[in-house]
Amino acid sequence: MKYVMIVLLAVLGSFPAAAVYVRAEDEQASRELAVSLGFVGFGAAYTAEGNLYAGGTCALICNSERNGAWILTAHHVTTDSNGLGTDTYAILKYGFAPNCYQGFDQMIPADMTKVFYPPNGQDMALIKLQSLVYESDGTLKVPLNFYTGILSLGQTILFSGYGANGDPSNGGSGECTRDGYVRAARGQIHRFDYLGMDPSIAFLEYLTSLLVPGIGSCHDSGAPALIETETGYELAGVVVKGRGADIGTWTGFERVDYDPNFMSWVYDMITENSTSPEGEIEGEGEIRVLHPADINEDFRIVIGEAIGYLAGWQQGSNPIAYAIRAVYLWQNGEDYTYNSEAAPPLCWILIDN
Image 1 (cartoon, helix red, strand yellow):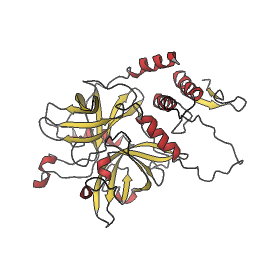
Image 2 (cartoon, one colour):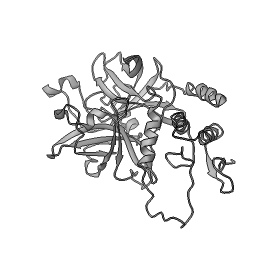
Image 3 (cartoon, one colour):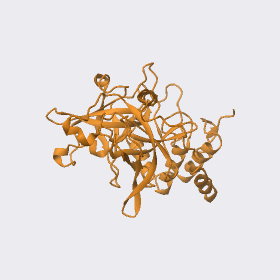
Image 4 (cartoon, one colour):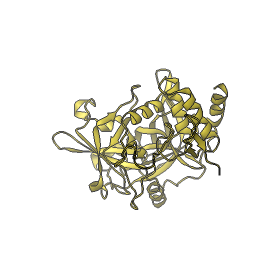
């Protein structure tokens, strides 16, 4: 086990940061990049009286038949400010489209019995949707994995959101508008703020005026803070505060690496509230036997799933033998299959490519 942990720590700091930036004034590039991030969505919130409020931005983190569709967003956009932020809105809906106005009619209601807030008090919300999320061609949207590395000053972060145009501090004067388009921009971590003795929120500060919204302006709360890797994007945090479109623009996001138990908490909430596959009848057809760490059911164990399951063992909720097997599968190829002739956890074996 000591060897496994040493290898994990060595790998966690090895992800490369992207060097190519979308220029702040390049509106077209910003939109095109954002549209390619299919896991970014928008929200709408309704009071019991039927009043509609913007529900910020969200990120799809799970989307499978077994576990259902789950999004992560900011806590404060799910609660009624008239109730001092303590009462969750009566209805929450989320959609995925290049423009939130054009995709409004296709929004998916949240399961209001499955809205969870982290026990550590971070400004985040984990929400289950009432149905799965599909691409226009009928395939399931691919969700985000968590970034499990250690964030550092100067590290590049990519944001994408459905924020307002203009400086949100001037919203009351009509200078903050919303055209509904999703946008993306990059920045670098400038400083960390502290909650107690640990840095909970990372801030990115920009040295020049940013003409594209979508980075810390109003309606961006809940937007994903992303790390770009060689294989795609990973979720490093959730936008919770910011000031946009002016000199000294900055964005603050809650860090998923702040609490070592956060990812295991997410895993527990999803597995405890899973969705049985439609039409599955016990004893009929081929049974898909997945390793329990395989949250998105793709017969592939990636680093986030392995570490998340390992964290569950540290809390006493997952067996150590299964955790070690998950790490083994991740380290030695990721893709695996099920061998019915072997007993767990050795029944999950690598695919011989």
